[in-house]
Amino acid sequence: VLAFANSAEAGAMNRLRTTPGLAATAQWMLAAAYALNNRTDVAKEIVKGLSTEVQPYREMGWTYGSGLRDESIIAEALMRMGDKAAAAGVVKRIAERLNSDEWFSTQSTAWALLAVSRLSAGQTPDKAMHFTANIAGAQGKERMSQKPIVRIDLPAPDGKKKVSIVNTGQGILYVRLVRTGIPVAGEEHPSSNGLAMDVIYETMDGHRIDPGSLSQGTDFQAVVTIQNTGTRGDYQELALTQVFPSGWEIRNSRLEGTESAQANSPYQYQDIRDDRVLTYFDLSSRETATYRIFLNASYTGRFHLPSTTCSAMYDNTVNARNGGRWVTVVKPGEATNAQR
Image (cartoon, rainbow, N blue to C red; front, top):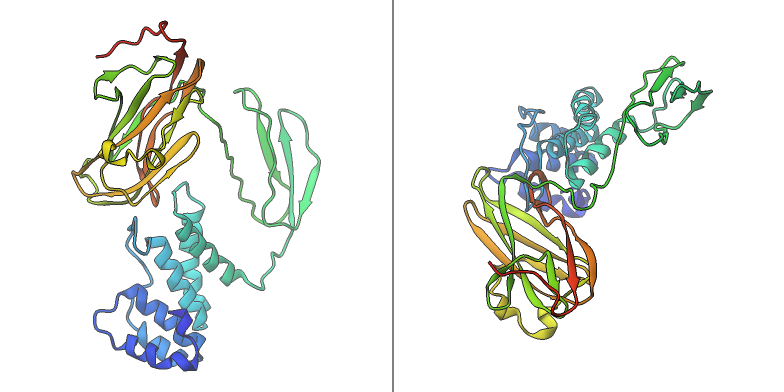
């Protein structure tokens, strides 16, 4: 809508303004466009009586909307109309949510940061940050920074080292501890939230096998079945990630012309790489999808088979994964793998 904010597009804006049943978010966007076109009076008329609060929701596709995204649009419109007092109340709620542990999509985060930065544009903190960081019992020197964010790398946690931050200035400091890591290979734990996923391995003629020990040169297939449990309705923009051991080769069905033999469920896009296959698809409530990848046990040795994961790209509360494990590829005649 903001693209309409010039006199040449005034007609299109006026037509949109008279459209019946226009969603509240669209009305706020249209008001921002009118304000940008120096018609604040029309902008205020459009949003008259509209609430500045949005009920929480999260959209997995289409516009990828969310309650946070929509409140950010409202804040943008209010600031375009010069109502910074009302915008400040909305931005305060946005900032509180950004400061929480809640997950947000890239679009929601971008809109929220835009709203916060727009309100704070031209403003500078009254005081610089003054603080000391005492790490593992060592007294730190007092630090001063004019930057809005200061990052301090901490030693690897062992349950014994303590860290304390002392605010030696007059302003308010917000401290956040961020810990990241990679699960130990082979010790990933299965999980399921709104999705049920089953991963099995079969011979090319459909007999189930244990991939823990395969004979070099064996052709086989990974079969992943995913079900929408129906607890959240239809799902959009699901991403299935299958990463395979370096001792296995992916047989590219597009190059081999064997796509019909896989009999895969519909998908929007599939990216076949050297060591992984990424499949993107939608899944209606209670619907089940199955995807097969043809593989070959090519190189002897012991390798790690990572977890297979499936998650909604724009809602981290919908996900499933199985556990990782170690697998071996042995010389022909040495495999102990039995069909079951």
